[in-house]
Amino acid sequence: MAKRSVQKATQTATENKQSDNGLAAPPPIINDRGFAFAVYVLYLLGYITGITALIGVIVAYFQATRSGRPPIKSHYTFQVRTFWIGLIYLFVGILLLHLGVGALILVWGIVWSLVRNVKGLLTLNRSEPIANPESWLFGD
Image (cartoon, rainbow, N blue to C red):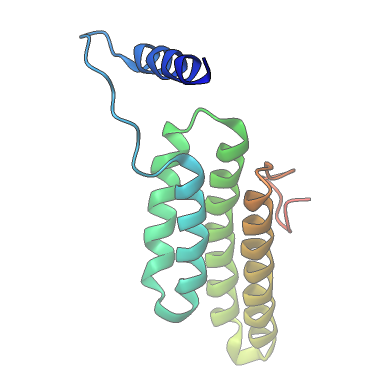
């Protein structure tokens, strides 16, 4: 009896995934949540390599336009803003480095981006959206 209900549920799910031409759409290899996780990891690796943060923001831009789920879309918005605001901190810090205050801005920028990435990962792990993805601080 249980086997029959599982088969029926599987058959219904397969029928729901069929496209207009009658072929079943294959399930994605990586879902939206997996892509959001990958972007956070790429950002964290960016502290060592630099280039992976650029790859991460490209992935976040592409996935933000394709994601239909608001909780995951909030993570992509948060990630894109983390990249651009972090880049602003980097440029301003480098420009003001000769005045001495630039070093403080660079240190703050690193701490700020680390906190945002770790907070984003923890929130994603709980399957929750970022409360305020447009925030300049930590998404609260």
